Figure 1 (cartoon, rainbow, N blue to C red):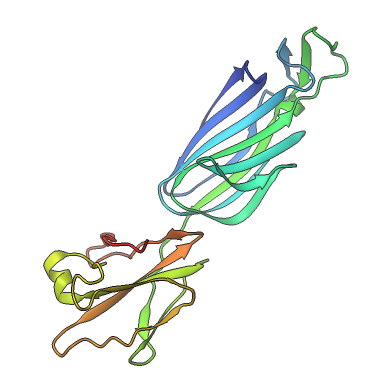
Figure 2: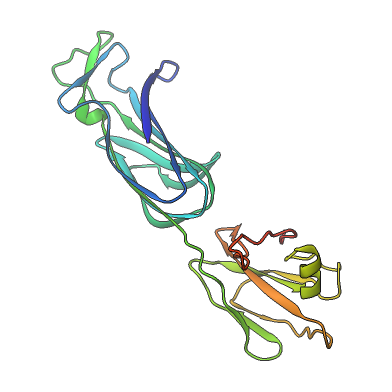
Amino acid sequence: MNHYVYFDRSSRAIKFDGYFSASDGATSRGELGPEPGTYLEGPYVRAGATLVFQLFLELLQPHIADIWLASENTNYCTLKQGGEIIADGSTGPLFFDDMFLAPGNYSLVCAALLGVDARSPGGDIPAQSRSSDATFQYAMSLVPQVPVPIRVYFQDESDLTWTAELDETSWNVYRGDLDTLRATGIYTQAPGSNPVAARFCGASGAQLNDPFIPDPGQASFWLVTPIVNGVEGDLGVDSNQAPRVNSNPCP
């Protein structure tokens, strides 16, 4: 992880920035700020100035995250994906554990109001800020979500059920024709493209009633994907351990 510091004159804020890329999981812990016992000095360090910590995360696969971020004078902390706030510590530290993060780009932002040392003059005269006011402490653990195969089976001739993985809120089920798969390599065949192809989107429980029975000599298959926080999971891997492509996903 690389950090750098800059002063944003437009907002009179000193900013500590960092960038973090995680594909295999990682843990980061420590403090970000001036050396202990030092002071930030200059015309821009006055009572009411703001110190901002920004950490950018690039996740290449789903992760389970534990994050704690705070400063002595924390004003607010947020976790954003794009412009959307997905975790809000608007009145203090940001803390959460076992939070599912889908692949994508995230930003952790935490701001603290700078205090002024009692020895420092005020007004327009350059002031000093204690290093304890200008240090963020953070602890972050990112663990890849290891896909667990969803085992699909029939309880009887029409009731399909499957095993749950983690924190699914719903599931998508895809039915396909085996001959079409062998001929085209397409697992999620568009409904209506052949007599077998169908999809059942947003199943709320780990079961589905599907009375379809293939004709003699015909073979069909079913694939199930999990949905966690509105994000659809994958179809698993084929016999060569290559990810199956979802060519016609549920909307």
